[in-house]
Image (tube, rainbow, N blue to C red):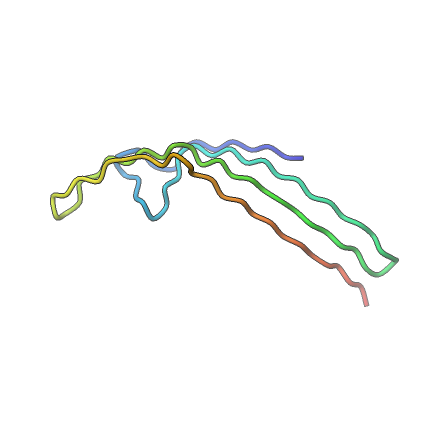
Length: 85
């Protein structure tokens, strides 16, 4: 299992709804299973908690965009096969 932490890449005033990242905490795990000498199967899962991602922006149309994301998370899953031939 792996755990990672990253600070917010942007300030609240520069955050946009297209990429609403705040501080990020990632939890990841994976497994591998060797079927035989030539085939290995693998799977991995990562959960990303991207924080509240508060937004406080004024765009060129003078319209304020203010808010936050209550659920700001991403789930990643992957599988692989290594086959030697």
